[in-house]
Amino acid sequence: MKRLVIFDLDGTLTNTLKSIQKSANMALEAYGFAPYEVDRYRYFVGNGSAELIRQCLLHDGDTGLAHFDKVMRKYEEVFEKYCMYEVNPYEGILELLAELKRRGFLLAVNSNKPQAQTEDVIRSVFGEGTFDMVVGQVADRPRKPAPDGVEFILRKLGVTKQEAIYLGDTSIDMQTGTSAGVFTVGALWGFRDREELEENHADAIIDAPAQLLGYIDDSERGSAETDCGGEWVREPARIRLIATDVDGTLVKDSSREVGDEIIEAIQALCDRGVYVTIASGRQYGSIRRMFERAERNLLYIAENGAHIIKDGKTYGLTKMKREYVEEIMADLRLLYDKGCHVVASTSKGCFLESKDENFIRLISESYRNDVTLTDDILGEDADFVKLAIYHKGSIRDIGESFLIPKWKDRVKTCMAGEEWVDFMDFSVDKGNALKVLQEGLGILPEETMVFGDNENDIGLLRAAGESYAVGNALPVVKETAKHVCAPYWEQGVYQVLRELYEQ
Image 1: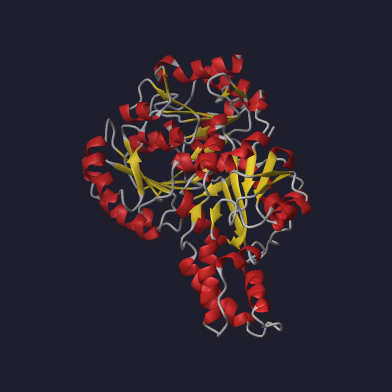
Image 2: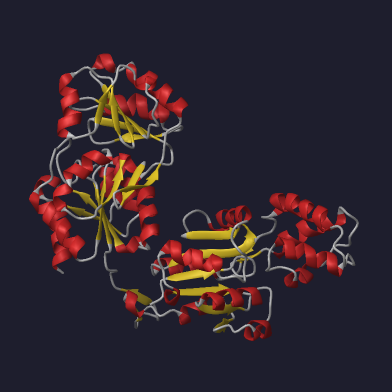
């Protein structure tokens, strides 16, 4: 079963010859060397920028490469400006990528172009999110045809070499794929000809991107040709990863425990090899205690995604900028006389400067957080991952009319239930955290099922193929989700999970 397609960049995904020609010719002419026609560069590229300049100089008469260093520096300077000059995807590539994504394949890029320029090209031509991994040339990893880049991708995405296909257009690519032990396909629309690809042991050679689909064994993914015009039809993928919000999704906001039914469902799913993730705005200590009765190795997304925990250890941590913490705290302290209270979270617990005993009991006993009382949160020597302000009953009016509009362009801020407004680094999102776990575990979005109820769950819902809003969720959450299940008080999540593990 194939799960991953790895693409070369130049000459396979994109026609970059004109950008390379313009940059190299400008560098050569700066030191008195003659420029080359674009077709000459077809045979200079593929083995990294240093080899490109070396070939240019050798063919221009500098057999001793006396000018190599200064021409190379000039090329790097110019190419940074012109790396996107007349760069376009080859005909049929966008359609191929869309079809592979539709079928649930992981997609990666392995290029000898420097990492920064590789990322620039991918981002500019294909946008964010098309590729699961982009690997360019870096100082501490041997460039192609060494198999290190391919092996790095396989390792990071959790894919075996038998589950991967490599597509490239040069002898370098054929050598890369075969040395890594993956099925290697040559692309004739690129920079080289059939003879070169055959001589370097391509497993298959194709004339157009769409032909790659003929070399993908998709049978185990539930796809087959039908009578409907030759379309491929996919059966639902097996769910391998489940992530659920807590407050408002499994239980009433601020609850201390979850029901026995949920614990039993988690145990049953874990015992069947499914990864279960608890994704909450709460801190790690709180949700860990809440689910410790399951006695299983669960994954945790805490603080709305700022803190990721795998195997009981921090797997990812995103801190807030100190200057933002100080400015936000100045605004939040103005709301103390309106009955509001603040929690400042770190990876190890939280700080409260409230003197209200009911609020302190709520955080330490109901939420079961690790609490430190302080007279001045900003006086603590700590790295904060989240600030949260609470008002009993509801803080929605203050949040939506003042706090969120003021801060939404500088930090991630959102309603977290009816009584809380959360502030985090702009990059923090439950969905982003889930993608980190998916990548680390080698799990596809379509193999993922998630549950949520509030705005801070929207990213989570978008990161999964099977997404559920509980019946009590906000309208915008229901619009985002693929399905709606019963509300938390009717055990909606449990009903879905029970049906899943009983299949």
